[in-house]
Length: 231
Image (cartoon, rainbow, N blue to C red):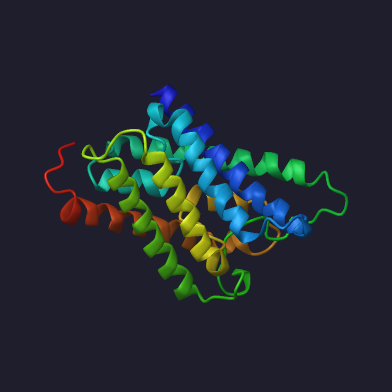
């Protein structure tokens, strides 16, 4: 179990450091042209690379919502959900701290939103709470269906990280303007703790919506799509 938890810690660290790091740097240096498409790709690449690196050890969740959705779909032991959540959040917070230490080395640095998630005034496009809730639920449910489908026993082995990484890229392309994209409570926590906006006060939504969406995605797979799959 120690190896699994360590893998989840490092995988989540990499996701937050790489994904949020690209967003923070894009905001600091807009002339580089990475834009939200580049940030979307960065998040997808973090999951893809770590899924190949340590997914064989821990399953490559790197996200409390994914752990919950897999448990709902009978793909993960319920007794392991809380330990995974703890190390995922720890990895995200450490990544946020390291990223903050690096970013603050730039003269005139101001944390601002620090790649955090938000709705209303904290939404990149000013979207409402209801819009943020809906998109996070829908996209997290879809993400779980991709994860469950690409890792099913009937699918050729070795390609799941590609599908999952590309799905996360697509999710960011859709929702960065709405919420700055969460679908991952650990990622949201790691960024919100270092933001100087009101992101921490809105963090509840970016736990509630991804967890609800993941449970819905797990149930859809379990009862409508799994077929004769045996676990």
